[in-house]
Amino acid sequence: MTDVIARLRPLLDRNGIIEDDALMARYLVERRELYQGRTRAVLRPASTAEVAAIMKIAHETGTPIVPQGGNTGLVGGQIPFEDGAELVLSLERLNAIRALDATNNTMTVEAGVTLATIQQKAEDADRLFPLSLASEGTCQIGGNLSTNAGGTAVLRYGNARGLVLGLEVVLADGRIWHGLKGLRNDNTGYDLKHLFMGAEGTLGIITAAVLKLYPRPRAVATGFVAVPDVEAAVALLRLADDMSGGLVSTFELMPRFGLDLCLRHTPGTTDPLTSSSPWYVLVELTSGDSGNLDGTLQSLLERAINLALVSDGAIARSGRQRTDFWRLREDMSDAQRPEGGSIKHDVSVPVSSVAAFIAEASAAVGKRLPGIRPVPFGHIGDGNIHFNLTQPIGMDKAAYLALWDEMSRIVHDIVRRYDGSISAEHGVGRMKRDEIAATKDPVEMELMRTLKRALDPKNILNPGKLVLPGKEALPG
Ligand SMILES: Cc1cc2nc3c(=O)[nH]c(=O)nc-3n(C[C@H](O)[C@H](O)[C@H](O)COP(=O)(O)OP(=O)(O)OC[C@H]3O[C@@H](n4cnc5c(N)ncnc54)[C@H](O)[C@@H]3O)c2cc1C
Image (cartoon, rainbow, N blue to C red; front, side):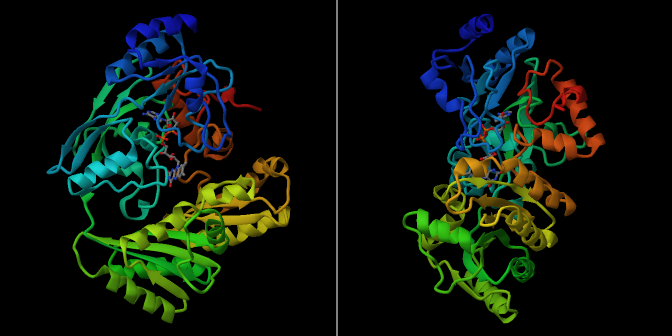
């Protein structure tokens, strides 16, 4: 390892390599502190050529590399293992916007640009880049594409992989794939970019991407709506889609308990409604023309009240009020922290099964641990539920978190019965690697291993994450 670092040092400038323990610390732990790794050095290349030079040496010496973006991932993919054998490669210095083509509706960006910067640059050009997550100020586009991130606009615009036209990727042996095309039609064989998106750094290092831009919405209407149950929320989604002609861009479910936690723990939040309800929906309509969207939302709510799908609702009358509604949704995860341990699941089921899934899974975990407090919330417009479980009041936090695997088995078994996915948008990383290996279709797993072996024959790209190269390497 000393030898490798000695070979890497001359390739990089003064800011290109960190070896000091205190300075490396922030790259070695993720925000929930579930994974704490070790390394000898954090590499911070400033160009694609430098990434390529690093990978060439890593390949020659068999040195494992962990790519890292904004370090907001929730499945431990960006954190090295505890044995200190891997080097971290941070993309944070590849942070240039290379081009913005307003006519082609594309932006070419380097991997380390934060999502919020990309959104702002698009807005400055009177365009929209629709990917939107609560971590957008910190996460980077390379991380977003590598995890195929979802977020609050999937319903209307699709997830991260659908927002990309081309990629530049450094391969395991240091070769560069120059795939930065801005074409919407290109039928010249395998669509290789999709191999690297959602691959969590196990097949190549994304160094740049051509992103699709969209017309910027001229009108936005946001409602905070009380619904009697999850069935009503799903029925409201269909009604909203029909009545608005497909203008629903956000449809987020929140339980009363989650709202209570926000009101209790997030300073400055208030309940938008005077009456209480077991469930709420944040619904947003957006449109490219400046028509009366508030009127459309008002008519929708009146119709839904008549159909008993909605019991109460408020429409944001100002930007400030819109931000306040959004804050309740975005802080729902953090507001669970002061209540003790939270066992989290990022699952998806067909939208038509969301209500049945939530009811069944809540009952099952409650039967195993009376007093457990489910907080199912999230992007139900695309069937994605963050099925978080807050610990019972008064229970020891460590004893509660020790039940994580058992609770996940209960929840994931139900997900599978509904033909769902145990990772809707956060990826697999280290956390779910063995579970997908044990439960995914065997042919699909073998295809994934074949790809891993073909593109990373020395197993140096984020080894031990997402998929192991061979069946024989599976634990147990
Ligand atoms: C408060 C909060 C809210 C969130 N909300 C959402 C949400 O709504 N939807 C959602 O999908 N996710 C969400 N996430 C999870 C996380 O933000 C996303 O997974 C995000 O896409 C990760 O980006 P990152 O730059 O932080 O990547 P990192 O965490 O640094 O890395 C994630 C994975 O990608 C790999 N990687 C990173 N950069 C590259 C690269 N350039 N080339 C190859 N591999 C790379 C890493 O090795 C790792 O496996 C949330 C996280 C937080 C903390």
